[in-house]
Length: 252
Ligand SMILES: [Zn+2]
Ligand SMILES: [Zn+2]
Image (cartoon, rainbow, N blue to C red; front, side):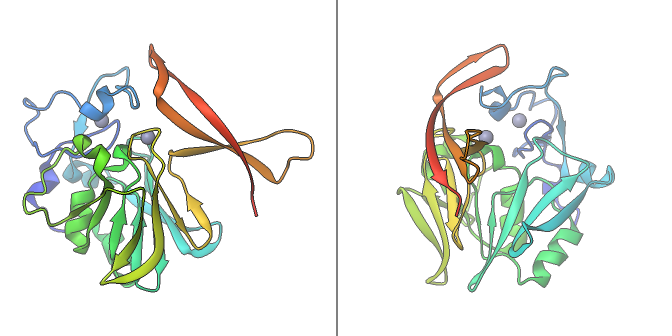
């Protein structure tokens, strides 16, 4: 992969967000980590770059999700930032990347291109904004984000080429006018625009929804889903308590 100027843009090591700044004297804090929904590590705020991550020997791993090769989980080792993962969803009209990870190298690009590249990227919420403009430029595809969360973007998209904002409550991702079957659902909560996607009868939830075992008698096939309403959460000394609304669903 080319050693472009953007390889030297600063990236927060705690949350993986890339900024439009390469001067460490200018960027001292990460606004996403300063927000109570993330955190600044006890060691303080630190920054790296894609160039440094490449030198440090990071690599991306991948595997089909639950053995279903329509879904490929992609993550970075050694673990970087929050340990985010992205999921490549194969559709009849091209691959859609659900969420994004910071690290992108030539091996990952070659593998994704061998599958036909990316037709679109959909990001659940700002904790996955990572290096999405790098990915969008590399694969020449749009990135879908919630309109409500745009204040958390940290890089300019000067030509307005890459980003498409979802303004409604749901939107099916289309490629050249064809529906992909990947539907973004705006549930809010964790962030006002927090998204899930529904496709092939599965719901991909990021941390918009959290599943916990019900743990009651004969309820094995049931899980409880908690909607995280961080806006009514109580924040203190780094600990987060979140109000939860529990919905019982049957896993088919
Ligand atoms: Zn950060
Ligand atoms: Zn989050």
